[in-house]
Length: 393
Image (cartoon, rainbow, N blue to C red; front, top):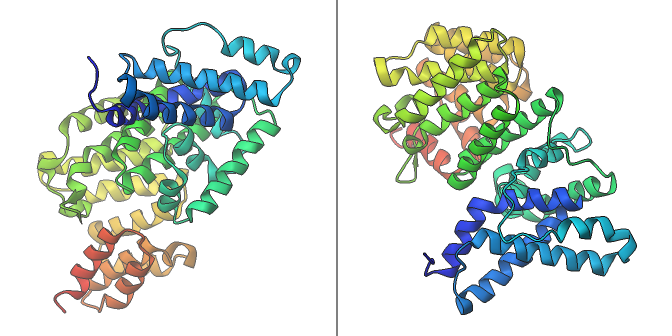
């Protein structure tokens, strides 16, 4: 059945197939930027021809063939035939369908290669596999679109010039880097409200978990993302930001929570706890509020302390301090916060936590809240903090 709206059909194909098609083309040519360019030309051609000729029965196959032809033409223009022989031969394989192989895991490994700057790995994955543009990615990272575009371009040139291999199977070290990048992309897409990209990141998490032979840490990553995604409909209501402790648990997706718990329990049976498993366990403890109506803050504090032994990050430290306010006392938490270095406290979450603790202790939260508001890139979070600390004072 043909989709009547060509633009909608192209958008749907982009959501469903972009990463798979880029991965297949890049694997054959070794040129990530060239694969993206070929696919971009194919989408442009679709928007021109589909309104005239009708949407094809298999849009993904049509796009694949168009991109493949454009890739061949580009190689012919750039290289003499004897240099391009092998690549052209591979790309000219006669296929009526889009490729059935899923090479996205290999493309993730390419993006997460140790030769690539760690700071650009998640953005590179977001663009090449999730199909986000430089403006969307830059906004998520608080970087100008032009600057992000330049950084992504440099990374792709490095992949091509250094001949970084496209490896369909990943060793444990590379898989760990891929997991970090997947979670980075998931978190950024989730915070930015990019629902399609968030769901695609979940798919990548499932791919990584299967490819690892259900390694406990990839299971922890998948369970963590499932728990976070379970709350997406409760996190924003009418554009208003709702913090975790105020969310309506009736809006949490129970199917996601059940799946997350199953994956996490399977991982725990290996008795090899790691960063992602512990983060997932913290989210699991929060999820119990949907069943019991209460949060076990003692358990969460203990889990954060165990997490810090594996991953001593600013986020984990602030989470631990926030849990201390509930399991011990706000004064204990404030004392712990004051003992942290500026790189932990002089951040948006650090100032937001300081405002929360000041209010709990009967102190003026507004100086800290002002700094938290100024540092937040999210208008909904800014509005939430303004309403909470300034509207009734």
